[in-house]
Image 1 (cartoon, rainbow, N blue to C red):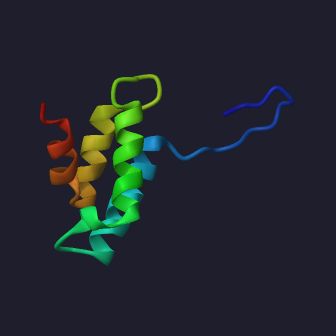
Image 2 (cartoon, rainbow, N blue to C red):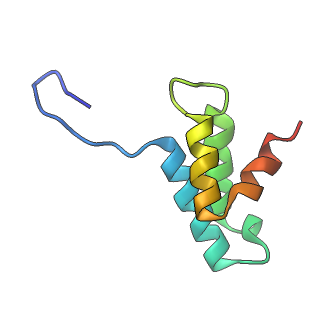
Image 3 (spheres, rainbow, N blue to C red):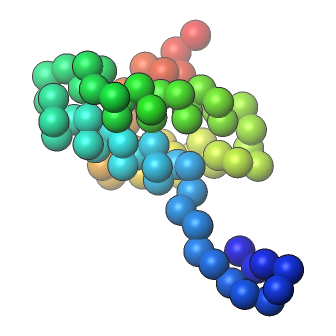
Amino acid sequence: MNLDNGLHINVIGVEDLIIHRLESAVVSHPKNPDWTDDYHWAQRMFQIHQNDPEIMDLDYLLNAANKAQVNDIIKNWLKP
């Protein structure tokens, strides 16, 4: 990201924040990750941004979730 003053910063995407929180939830409670605050933070971020393609790239999120082995959680969130 380029700032008005000419400086450049790197910012982690919401997709990666969601994945990191889910990984933490799974590590701390493998059988019940939904018991953790990390799980609930990830779910909130997902719910807030899931319909905003300018903020969250759903394809990237699903691919990253698959690599991190948390894709089943996100697929459950996508169910109607």
